[in-house]
Length: 578
Image (cartoon, rainbow, N blue to C red; front, side):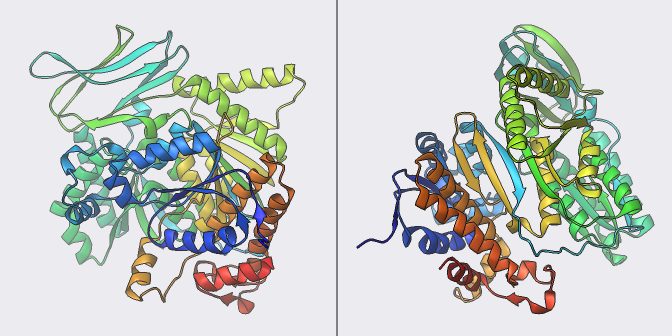
């Protein structure tokens, strides 16, 4: 007789890459197929299969999630240039010149946009983690950012009517060339930003000269994987200057140069900062946030993490830099924004200048604010919004929508939770240096990405957090916020699978959340109870001091910890589930 729990609804499983995929396969075998009679709709979202299908599997994943409503997504690898070349050599029949963007880019943004989902990231409530904060008071770290250009000097406004926004370029030929167009509706915010590449070069020289004069290790942080035509263009010229003019001097002084994605860099600032460093963040809106944070940390340090932090990241509208059109200008010329036939703005650009056009959907913003208030009310959270209202019409629309939603809820006799609106830099400082007991920090897409990694670093590791993507129509996608653990995967391969150091906690928790949602939706009490028991088995395992290497020394009683590999940890969770 089959003793497994019968489940009526299918569960969408989106497979990924590298060490995370190794863990995922073990988790599905131990906690799904052996215990549940359930139909799994499995889709291979590995980097290799995205290439082989020319991105079609990403579209298939979106369709499957929309049809079935609940899914679990594993981490997938975003290939760099070298990895893409390696895959193309492995598959010579693939036409590398005619690849769809979905074939090579991260599928995350496309899936979130496809299901119109916003992201909420929360700490997993492990009771015995006691993260030891680095001593920050007086630490000798400086943040250097550009004063002008970028989002700070953008032209931004609200659309006065529904229509089409077009980005036009007039170069040496004198003929207007359409670079990009997108549909917008009345009330949607849009923004054009550029940066002067000569200003970027001048900043780079000052930045490296300062590091040499002050004898500091050098860290450069941008988001070139998501904004290649903007942050990527800046990274390219800055690193060219480093290699041609400063690399030898820096190395001769015994100093080091590091490039990191800005979210990973921000996480390092709070979790593992060097003793003496110069952090370069050319994007001035992000740079000023980190500058103010570092100044606050130097004065007050990082308090103990008694608070439970949730971050809601507005991504459904495809807004801010993540949904932008971005490229470097191919020649000198004039850039124009045309909205429904009327020229709204024009500015000169020079060859190589990074250009960015972004917009957002007011209705998607409203859906997100409603989701934020709903989540906060359900879990008794205080809400702290971060907006740049003082010089950004783009952000002012968020403030208007918050007021609108608040009035609508009041008219329905549903008071919104306690909330405040502050600048994003103040929001970030509060999250780290003055966290309330139980708070939700709503952020736009890029800020939310950065804040999530910071919060995860404070919570223990990226494996001690959960990530939930929820759409207006109720589609739910649960995932781990961490990546594929490339370095651990290489060690796994070198050892023929004998060395498996990976923390599968976030993947287990994502699966349990998905199963609990299925149980609630189909009124399946045994399934709901099993999901709750699986989460309890996970937290109880860590609470007993059984941890993977990333949490070594981070429990309340380090001397009694039992450090195990991935297999040992999964077996311990399985035993706790008996």
